Length: 364
Image 1 (cartoon, rainbow, N blue to C red):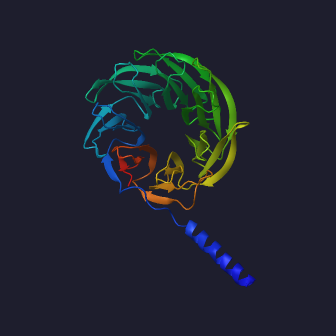
Image 2 (image 1 turned 30 degrees about the horizontal axis):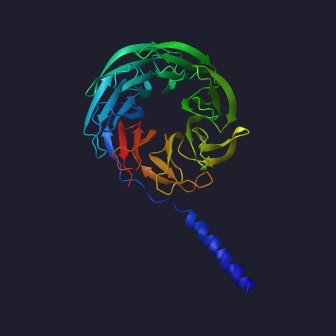
Image 3 (image 1 turned 135 degrees about the vertical axis):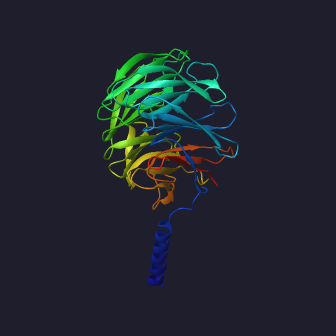
């Protein structure tokens, strides 16, 4: 009787393991492709034409342009407009920089060591009206009100050990603020409240680490702890992965084909939870409950593959294997998650850097 029980128990374990090894069900509809410019590298969503629906702006790094795709209520983008900008647009950041009630666009120019502001004239018409000089090879930016004066500011990381804070004047202008040294070769900056003091902080992905910069509320930042990752994190995502209502950090280790999860800890700030495999040269990720089970999942874009990878989350944090791989186009470089068709389910937009398209996948 005992042997029979053990046999049944082992069979149950084997079948459970087999069940877990199946890829998850696909929560997205088939991708729809839209042409953009040469080598799209970044996407941002905002209502640029005041239609009440989300539009898209795509940075075309080798085309020296930005493509605007104007959305409809069904999540489609039947109309587009391409605007010429400076050399090497690498990243985008949106906000009402001149406070006229319309969303403007900041364009980070990697090859010109600067950024342009495209001011929104209404009805989707964008005009380039300002250019600002930055340090060598700017790579990523985020817009927030860092000094609590009611105006949007910018934090920009440049490839060679540089974090710059630019303080906005509410008229579309910026003046130089503090300069920080994140070390290594910073690839991405994001904002969030990482030490629970209700002041905006920054997290920077650089060579083999995530570095925190803790906001002081006056536009300055104090360099915080450095959290070691696997090889070359090219991105970082802030999200509550373990359900404790505090933001955790996920490093996207592009050259290490892996992810590193750091969970929020009141004593240590953050502690390393685990490393996870992620093939294809992961370069960008989004985190959300895509399957409706109230647990955070992730979707990765990998530059060496022609697919994105959907990984279901675990309640305690972390992710299940294997992922579900979905073809979107050649060399997906960046991924964005937004509810494009306003149905309450999160949709995806993927920039395919080698075939001059974006792919839109709406949630089922």
